[in-house]
Length: 103
Image: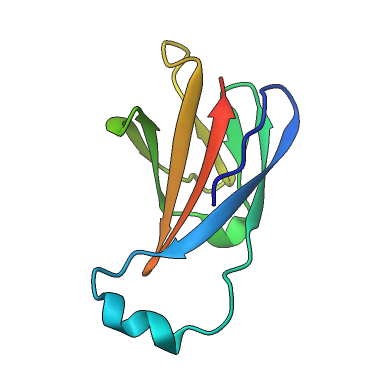
């Protein structure tokens, strides 16, 4: 459940899934997780204010490249030396939201 988008002033849908190693609990969760929407302007990603302080990882080919925390302004800035297609992971409690973006 990952959305593909290109860079420069894009609205990005981040799809969510449970980050729960206990697969037995899956039958309890009956409703799909709603995606969250973020704005991408090149290497700057803007999240809703209720995600301030949450961890975001940048992953390339299943390798963690960069980790940051969403700032008080709701933004993260991914360093310019990271480019191409990357996967973003946002952690919120037992949920992980993911999207693939082009930097």
